Image (cartoon, rainbow, N blue to C red):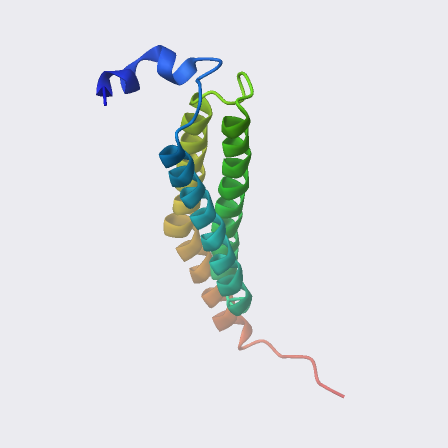
Length: 138
């Protein structure tokens, strides 16, 4: 295989890139199926974490990411398979990967910076509210 082809402009931005090999199709299919399986796993974990609102929100964000990546990936794979001009270009995979990384970066920022702050605020609020009078039950 000539690796110089991977770095050529025409390889990535050709309007009609040609037939996709079976190995590439199977590899992309496996990647997109894994994304959807991970989304289902996050859905099941989110159902168990409904008590902790911060963890629930983080898991739902991850579930949305993997669901969207899997579905959009299957659409891209369909366009590759049907050899539709411009929609089957290889640059859609680059766009897919860039969007995935940016979205994962936002989720990572939420998980590492905002979630601990929200957990601290919630625990502070709970400590404060434990001393407040509660409504009497009838």
